[in-house]
Length: 312
Image 1 (spheres, rainbow, N blue to C red):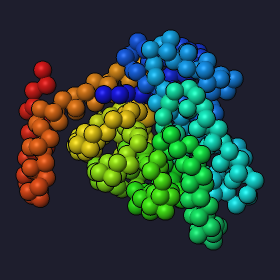
Image 2: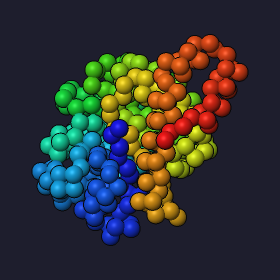
Image 3: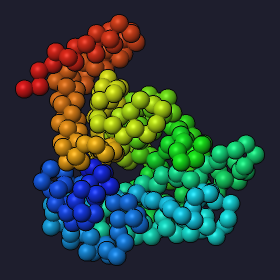
Image 4: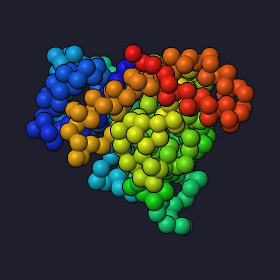
């Protein structure tokens, strides 16, 4: 199982020094890293980053775009053509850095492409603009996976790419083999989606490029420890991730503030390995046989059986 965890959860307790954070990851047994671009790479060229990762027995999974300042009224869909072009150029630069540093996934979350008021944006114009930008990025970096991460709201009242349905529509119009989706568990709960539904659909289409795992109560991007609030939904989600042979990295997108980041990460690792063992012990075929019955009582009995599984 390929695992990564959130760098920003560690920075403040490791002297805001990326090398110290990588050392902590190595001690934890984390093998992959996702870098925020350009936040984590300022003044560090790709070759130097690659060497630092290697020194700490780490590999780069990819980079995640982080838009700040001038982009607060929109990124790829910004009404100002120059700002939209700068967002597109930033995505291309991130792709170049990702490739040079040894990564393969460019994750794009458009946190500011959205709206807060009725009559505020031209929906069709923004749609076409974002679609064309993704086509340009995909064609610029055909050797990389370009992955759309959706979220229903925050920081905007309404995000433009907000759900599995809208993301699926966008993927169809982009129509590029190297464009897929990153599923963030908390984001799906916020949209009142069942995470397993999205994992099955996108996984079955070969479009699942990234998994951000965490937990929450659905009203906010809580970033709680894995399986702490919705364990059965998490198990079902991981069942479909395994069923569709997801070979990418599972990234712990959790937000320890009171908890020490290393201790919290260890617990996430313990929980995901436990869930993985439960699924393997019960068996993919048996779980599928229960699903095929389309029977709520049988499904509930399956859930109760998870409690009695020995993972020793």
